[in-house]
Image (tube, rainbow over all chains, first blue to last red):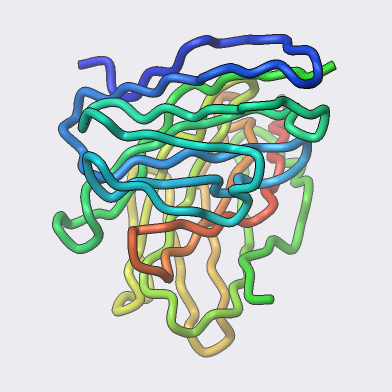
Amino acid sequence: NAGVTQTPKFRVLKTGQSMTLLCAQDMNHEYMYWYRQDPGMGLRLIHYSVGEGTTAKGEVPDGYNVSRLKKQNFLLGLESAAPSQTSVYFCASSYPAGRTLTDTQYFGPGTRLTVL
Amino acid sequence: GESVGLHLPTLSVQEGDNSIINCAYSNSASDYFIWYKQESGKGPQFIIDIRSNMDKRQGQRVTVLLNKTVKHLSLQIAATQPGDSAVYFCAENRAAGNKLTFGGGTRVLVKP
């Protein structure tokens, strides 16, 4: 049981390039999330999904797109990377709120992205 | 806007002492709170949670206290160990979709 995994771990992009970050979870969670974390700050929600085939905007969605074609995978895309998107990106997953005794989100190890 | 925040950015603690990390929240509609621990280069790790119908919850060496009157949350770590050195975040759940809002984090440094 690997939990939440993310690929790649590190990536350097040039301004204007595109890339996709992959998140996978093997806990059969219905909800998945993408966050970004900037130095010395907490996590900010980019997009999230409450089930296969559904996505929704979070706090800072601009410049990002997501897809949830399979329940276990949640992809985060940058179509035209900008230096402001330099950050550490974390994926998380959870059961729906209220379904279990805890609504805890479980996080992956992160992807460190640098945009030059 | 409404947010979750922390009073102390850095807490230096002697090994073996107790640690107290504080967090303020402003949305009285929040009904679920979580404390996460984040070690350098890793993702946040769940420590303990509490629902708004509770005032206190205990785990292994950790206790979370919730004061709804003043909208304050605290994490107490008993007998702090070097492995407790990390950044601690509080988060609140106040929206559909189980979305969490995170505070800015407190760094705990354990002195030997």
